[in-house]
Length: 235
Image (cartoon, rainbow, N blue to C red; front, side):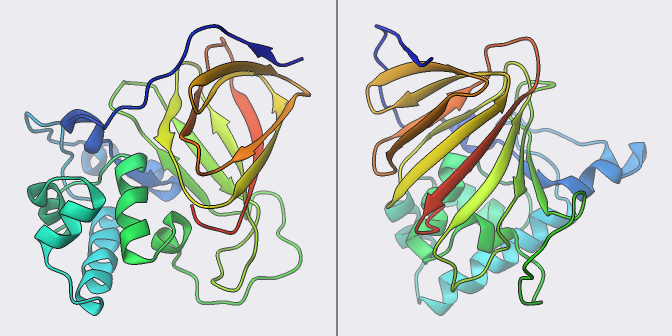
């Protein structure tokens, strides 16, 4: 059963610390302790990794292809020019919310940004072979992973993944074109859609227009697993 709470959710622009949440792919977890050690600045920026450089170069190429300056992109994506410069140079990665805004301005999706394979998608993807993106918020031990169910392809009409949300973790508010449906495989989530908040549990499903600001967090003591499908693939 979905329980609707009385508390309204207010939409706010991410602060500087939220802008600098690093996002790294699952392969980064296999780094040695020495290479995984990071130096953090006062703004919470992480030292460069291979994934940071890959993302930065792709963003810079897309910006230059569209003949945009850093200032123009920063204004349209509602973030700082200095942050964009650090991202393009592989010295920082923004939060998922800010990254989505940047991608939207540049005509990309987050999935396309992190995609590395040029091989055409197949009909069947075996267990353990699906690409996984791992998001590390600034809070220690707060992790959200997205296991892609549908391979990234510009011709696709659907976008889908299994979200694995650790206790206390969540995703900031985002909005984009389209509509979404989700099914809770296990665990509990507190979701925000527009000004409302709802609590959903194992077996519950939910649907909404993606233009509404939406996000979630895991308030429970165990991992939450949720299948999320949206169309068109604008995230």
